[in-house]
Image (cartoon, rainbow, N blue to C red; front, side, top):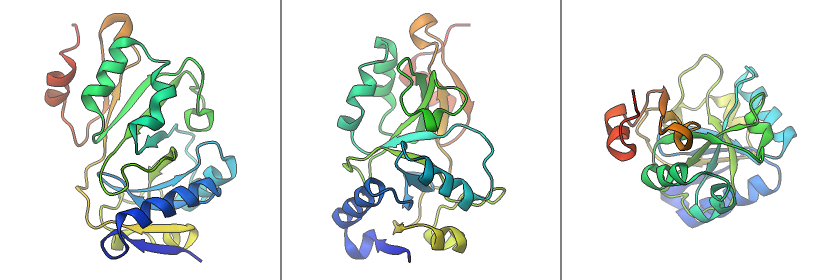
Length: 212
């Protein structure tokens, strides 16, 4: 049976603790990210990731992001990145962006799938900010359906199949902007792989315009 927690009624502390416990125990959680509701689990748990693919209705083979809720949880990963990439993380995170970075140590291989040298990462704040767990993260929708920005719009089968569901009100509704930073340290270039909540002009202000 799915345990349901409301941030408004039960408080952010209880929601964070429940998320950490669910992920640590190998469970699957529905949770409010900064833009849309997500499905999350331990990024090292193949069984939990398979459950997420089953809930979504299809495993399309695509890589997924690893989401963090506290900068401290990213410190080992940050240490493997180049100077320009670390500066970019400082300029853009936390925020509604997914940053694709070099992954020389091939961390989180289950999230990277066929491209272990590249890793998508997110860092968000908000009510769940400060949670110590990293999570494998994807949107909380069935394949082909829109990603939900309101708890009441989450597919009933997804809610029933999760171990934990956290209600966090209505979110902004736009997906994160996906930015490829893998060439940033070699030639100062970056590119947008998916437009979303942060537009290219804002990225240019924070990162500097990429060379022609």
